[in-house]
Length: 300
Ligand code: GUN
Image (cartoon, rainbow, N blue to C red; front, side, top):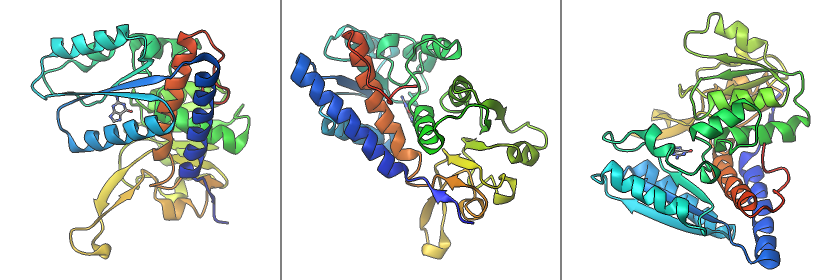
């Protein structure tokens, strides 16, 4: 039987709608407008597209968007000064420094200069530690989006076998922590994992985040499993014409959709959830800063 297609685009629109409603209430009842600052260093075209999209969706949700575009040649100290200024600005509740940074910068040092309570990416070492120890933290946006999709699909995830493919700090590791927090039995698999197909076949939940196009075929998937595909890979598509490309995930969608119970498509699955969760995190950071109740269902 063909899998149910999990519509991340629709779900993300619903999350943005809930954020916008909460933001409107904050304004009406408390005169507060959540603010998100995005810092972009250099002119990486993909980063420019992301930053534009973030700014647009921030404003559409009724929040304030602050953009700081710095030249690629800016010194690390100058960037740190901008971060310090945003840390001290009461109108800014969330700060995101777009990665990658130019090679002459130390990314860890810059990320750890962000005030942890404003770190809406959840990359600060203090938030990583808090997530790992089950304390209230800011949670990385893409894993949070995956968790929301899984909870919407299953209600409780308790006792399920989850396999996370990929061990990145941005997706794989925090995803595993979140699944553990929801009482899954979690395996993190990676390029050195032995008998990978067998490991994946045990999973009720597969989260694929390895960045290798169509790496997971359908015959690795347990019948009825839920497959969350975080990969966004651009590959040649000669069938569409010379020089054309298309986006694919880390999962071979056609064969996996024959076996899975539910699956996220690429594009239109996890992708749109990331910015929706960034807005949710900005709202959460604002509520925490002002000691107001946090929005329900928008945090881990
Ligand atoms: N570059 C690509 N994705 C991200 C992200 O989620 N956060 C930041 N800060 N930079 C990115």
